[in-house]
Length: 118
Length: 245
Image (cartoon, rainbow over all chains, first blue to last red; front, side):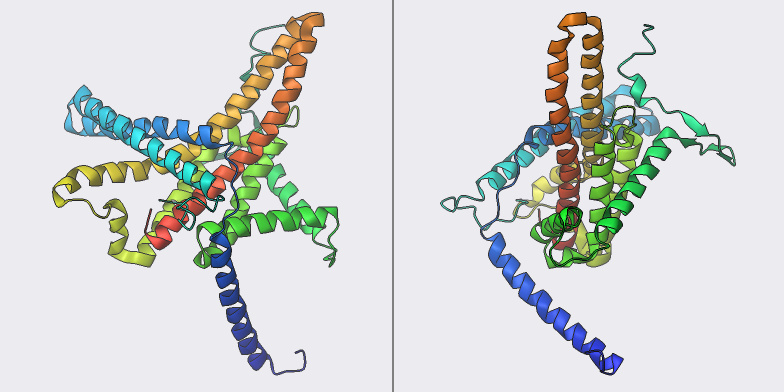
């Protein structure tokens, strides 16, 4: 390879890289069908924060809207209620995804080939 | 034993080492900056020194470097697919930085830069803005379909779209909060138990045993939080690239 003209060796290298990558992609898609199990220990920590951050963000948006519209507590209160809903929904989603991840390794489950994000 | 001096929260205090003032903005070099630099130097040294031999059969250090590479490359491949390959340098740096600052923070008398929410939020907002920009550049207006769940009747859209937008905006907050809360809580707990050891005299062995166990737990948490931060970055990247979630 060292004696070749640099340009052809680059194009050759490019072609070989591309071939290797597509081969690798094939192998990966085959492998992810039998995905390895993922650590579930961080599950609880991941879930708890979803609720808090939804409340913080929607409460914050409400606070700024109140400042802007001059309707001190009302928009924030409404947004906090909405934030509760969003937080619950996000929590549920995360929990379901973690559940799916946990069962991914078991072949009898019907969600085997499912991507990690629902 | 003055209360302020041994407060469990004293460890999070920012101390100015070198005063720097740029146009009225306080840009002092603090203990937090010092430990971030130590983190980066440690990562660079660890990776370059261990890979210097480039042995076919890796030694101990080279194994560690190769394992961490493989770990992140595999995570990215599994969660984002082959299009995620070009974001590997960023994700790898992110993981190594968080992991090293978490673990270095466990050394007694050191400082954990990730126990400050501004540091974690800084990283989270970079991830959030970066991922959003990648999505917009790749998909242009179609990126907005991320906020419109498929198979939902039209009359529900005005309700669902704000919900989706807000839950999209919660991402950097939850990302930052999770890392910060875990690091701060763990370190505070260690210090509180450390206070018990001193206060209980001979019976201090019991909290001492608890500290040993907690310390092991904190090591797991340090790794786990770096892992969680990185895998969520991968998932968000996947959303932006493939537009499904």
